[in-house]
Image (tube, rainbow, N blue to C red; front, side, top):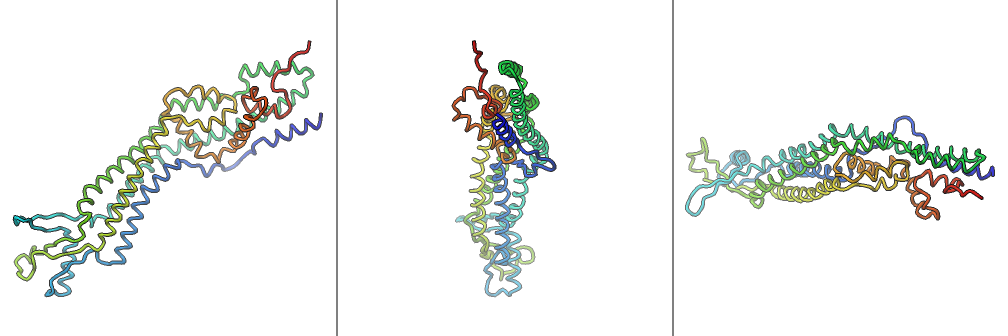
Length: 384
């Protein structure tokens, strides 16, 4: 009998989670994996393209190459290159002889637009970081701590039940007291349950999350509109006709009406425009997926933690609209599953519960651990 008692005590002691004191949860993720991927692509692609544009500029030197007349000196040719790059206006004449111009300013504003686009795409992440991340961090720290504590309390309760059962001279009196305790919900811990129920009625975090993704969609749509409006019109125009007959050169007869010029970085301009359009077109479904996950309850975590007391009551309350702070917190808890030490223990208990021969008597971790400790799964029948 003492050997069985020692084995039960050792098993229950090993089942307890170690007490983590001091600084903890330093690696808490306050962004979902899909959100981090969207942020890195939305901000990183313009910065990567900006570095590509600067590398091409450093390697090629001048951004424009004008074919000045042969009678122009080197200084005059250099002046033509500078004047045409400053104006970036294409001059042409139609069949009727009408003079038309088309601005190519998008080439000059190209690097600055990439930098501005990266800064704008980072604004939703800044909003989330300062408006929601502090409150989310506090919620996650409390919930993770309480989930692990609830697991430990359940194990300590089983240790106490085993000691009482071993000291009780009448097993039927012990089971009567145990049944009464279960009916009175002595084994449940209402603090965490009520806190999560309160989060089910709160919408501040989810409103900030919706605002963040809505702003991202708005900025992506604006970026695509900018690319379609200004880049598409000059996408295939590598060369243009530049006119320098202005000011003091207006009446000079040796200066031609137009000088052909070629944009040396046009291939980079095309590659960057296509890359941005493709990247942002692929980001839109990813953001839509992030928003769609808020429309259904994420019960993957609760399916495991229903082994703890009171979580079955929480599952029965999930009948309303899932767009609330609790559903969003569940997503972040799943993203921080490595910080939940009790999750792996309860996952193993759930697997053992499914294969247990007396699983109809097992509802919580208390029932399962009392069974493993050698107690009867149910109240024994009185002998007559």
